[in-house]
Image (cartoon, rainbow, N blue to C red; front, top):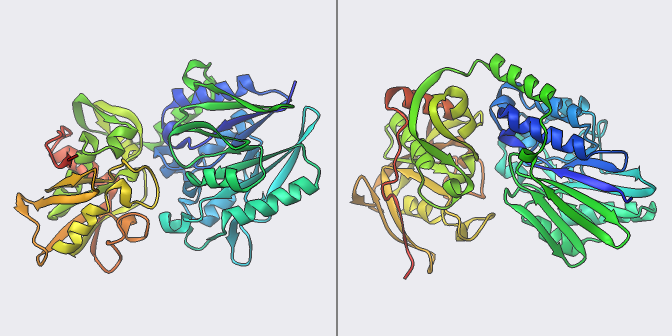
Length: 453
């Protein structure tokens, strides 16, 4: 036998599906033994419906059920502020490792976190350290009081300390997303257990095994740290047995949240997949953008693709809980005033080629009241209209969008706090009001058109 790692990450909305979270826990428990460490690589407390209601503390039910050993922070683990994160960590059964998150002059929560940890497993010494995306303060307004150090330098210090301590294996527990690749190339680690980017990844980079298990309990990776190097087996949690006690606990939490009011009905299921969020115009994106524009009477509704969370399709009766799960953030809808020239820049910034993260073929804007034509081969905006008329560079337009976009430089940098002129209700409240008044029957009608030649 050799020591094993059981890896999960980015649970997020899975808490809102008691069957799914129960099967994830059941899978981990079935695989676990004295020769295994259960490891999470971030965004395992938030976002989601139950997370919003419980400020992430519903995750404690899961952590205790699977007896997690080691965890690091994702950007969403700070959704309710550093104090709430500290309290949750203090009540968790696992060791939280973080080599690059700092609070003032010292490590964040030094009384309840460690930069790295060493575990004796099946006759081997396994060292694990954690690193988190340094862009977190600019993509999570509730983390702006924290400092996230350069992760490669922090990782080098952690690896040096662990190697000096005589460990047999070094494992990076990473929430860097695409930065995992640089980490694997730059630092002497055996395995990178990654997260943040929601695609499932299993690849070798030089002599380092890099894994990401996707979002919402898409996969569990079982890693064997053998004498000839690590090897990985992917497990689908939905094929496993369900932890009934955990599923029942989450059902009770959902009932107590009192979000079961039916606000609309969907006859044709509305997909909430990665493709629906990031590959162009979609019904779910149009629904959200239409709701923003309807509620505020703005010229344009705009929703960033990353703000629409993946999950089960909307179908049949639609409840407030369903709509919270689409945009599970305590963020208001905001109204901006921009010139036509600036609006065209906003549309350009929707291309994955112009994003600071993600994939080149992503499209990062769902829009209402407007249409765009984008040349995917040249990465150029060909045409843009509002209310059927060409965008006038000298005119002023109002845009209704999530307030988050005014806090980040990584998405739609044209929109800054100087453009914001008003705030409206919380996102999901806007969706609920729209569903009650207008209904939930979006269509795809040519708002985003690709030109490839």
